[in-house]
Length: 481
Image 1 (tube, helix red, strand yellow):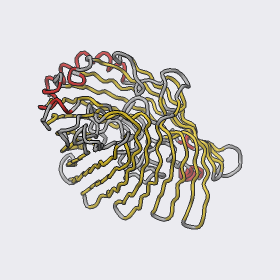
Image 2 (cartoon, helix red, strand yellow):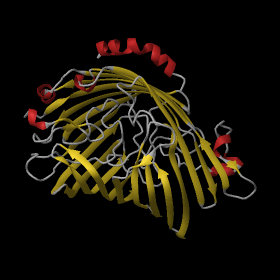
Image 3 (cartoon, helix red, strand yellow):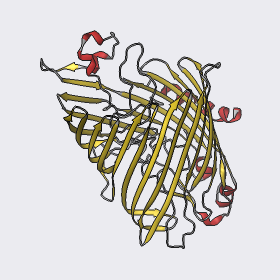
Image 4 (cartoon, helix red, strand yellow):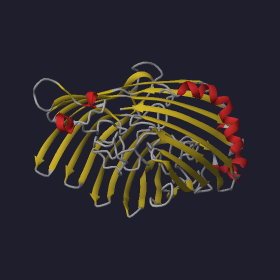
């Protein structure tokens, strides 16, 4: 690991210095609309909302009462009354992120070594007028040094990331209904199936609508959306004409955790797997149990998939588990977490049945900062350890082991494209990834982070093509309020 840091960091140093005044490892937060898991506290000592990836879930209305204000400089941007009418106000904010990544042995030597810089700005305006609101968030995302050229997750120029209107209806003392239409980021559960793709430079948005019902501890989302496909120029992002997503996602909160139950429907007119190409219509039912108590935390999720691909049935599944223990009374408050995931693969490309699990629209950095493999036809085991070295400084170490779930299928990247077909090897062992990361919350608004990762290829990679070790260095700054 020491040699890897030296080989990657020295050529990167000049570029990294230019990155340091502006991006992110974001603080993930509970989302009001989707019922995601709990998150760390917000600004201290006053109790402002936790900053979320989606931003529209932050409720700053408490600042209407001057007695709740602390004098923090960001309050001037969070509640801007428009006239004398109560409940009519603006909330504004911005995220500025710069991230540098350098790769050696990229895609095990199948792609050129490279070092590139991602730059991203995400300002937003949230207009509230009683029970109605309009939320607008443009994006500026550019990249330099990507080989052979920037792709849709690297650059989109200036465009509309989010723009929607919604209205809230109070049905009774305990029940509300929110109706929303437009373009927005979606995040459900642990983002194993629907996420914002926050880690890469261009986030994933959807066009469509959803209804959100809150009744006591229950939250239910009903939606129909199409994923937005970024273009390389200004204001040319359009939703996909060939892919659609719809479903019902419910969360029931209870003391110390919650339970998700959901159905997701998905259509892709031009799907491709090792099995072949064709129209895919897939149905996913799943459940997630999550919680934390007495230093223990857990997150368990099971998914079953059916439907049709071309002229054949789909029979796929996935199981994801996470158990952890926080030892806050020990020095450096270590947190030990073990994750284990299984995503089914296809038994044979000639059996007229598709068994490859489809993760749909998962979070970007799925298994860590270096994630060359996606959650398709994979078994992985990931023990991790996090230390709080100083009150605002965290150090993390992860090791991830990968095997193929089925010898009859290949391995896929994060978007679900086939990386290596399975017919060239009977080996299950794919490889081992190790990652060291550090994150410093320099202030309530500024985060500095760095990581170094290495992927050592296993028998399957060595027997099916180039098999260099992958090394990656990531440096990131994030300023947001």
